[in-house]
Length: 296
Image (cartoon, rainbow, N blue to C red; front, side):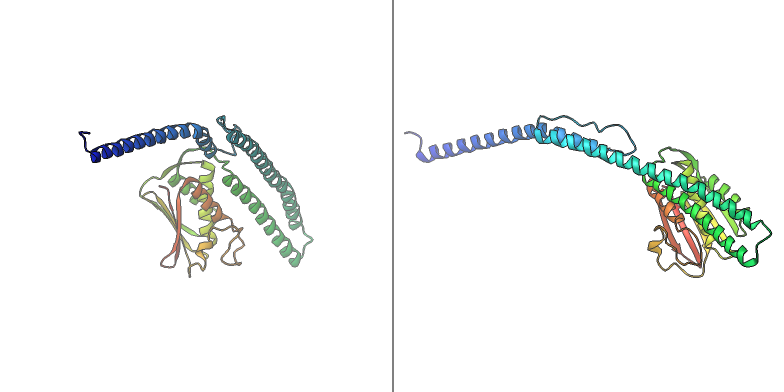
């Protein structure tokens, strides 16, 4: 009776608040620890799925769980990944088989047409028709080869990495093109550009860039190649800028039908740059089409 009733009430309220807060904190951290333990297999399996690769034959290292739903999910993931790998292998095999089987008949047709052209029984009209057919066959063979390369790039089949000196490779490419082209090609460099990539893809990158510049350059036009800093600049003369530069890297896109290219050269260049995270840009300046690849 010595203590005032208001003080007793305040003490009871504070005691209850302390008890409630303590119970809440204990339950919160207990549930958090329990949930973390329960969900640990799920998050580990999620990380394992992020590293899933179609090119690898190793199964996904899934963690078993006592929870029925997670266990069923692991089973379905295993079935799904096996099916995806099987479909991928079948598609890959089909692509390779089609590409291989097309090469032989195309080569045979090409050889037969050459034999007919080299004969003495053709008139001018027949000669022109056979020459046109021969060019179409060559274009078809080139298209088949480039589509196969695109498929392999998109399927990450070029996994080999080595140090490639781009400046030396572009110099070799220019030397090769000078032997078969009438265009004037000027090359300058201020330093060596070295990158880590598949050498075969590096050769395709340089060849396609130079081939594109030569095909779309006026006859006897000048092509300028500059290696500056960590970037490669390839420019060729032109009268007007492209009408649809946003479609430049699309498959089979051609600005005009006057040039009978496959429309796949720049698409392959873009896929290679995307694969190795290089940046490629196009601009038109002072009557020149300029392609810039930054290898950072």
